[in-house]
Image: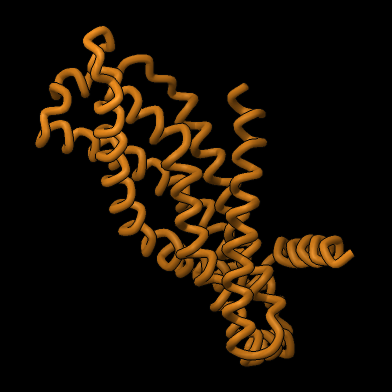
Length: 246
């Protein structure tokens, strides 16, 4: 029963979130602020993880492709496909759920326990719309860009490790990242990232918005938001893969 109540509260909150903003000028200013906080501030972690993951993928594939009958260009091909199909969308979002999701939940949760949200309601402001919708829009805009950045940096990481270690000739690696390329796979990754963006921001905002108590409860809300986001990302990863690729 508690689970059904939780779902009902979530959809009721989302109905309030997606209402018409009172002042468009203030609303779009908030969106720009959230783009900076959610998207731009996440570039560094996405970049570092993607470069090293691309390098590790290239090394692992090269280690397992020791047979002379397996063409070396498959190292570049495998690195590209892994980055596009899974890592740069799903794995990156699992990382962002910890960074972005916990930050959103703690931010809104702190506003709740310090009665800032109550003050907004007293002033006649739709607090859910004002606080949450700009975060959702900002994440939907920036997360697909982070996906493209992750793909490029992951491939670059594989290139760099190939250059410095010689596990594969550079022409073979470049040929591998070009051969059998399917543009739809990039679109598939972007579509998944849009769904994940909505999941992370809305779930984290939900747990933060309904925080009750003190500082300890804010920490619990952040943890619950991250756990719930990760579970939903994995579920939607399975569903979207079946719908979009099979």
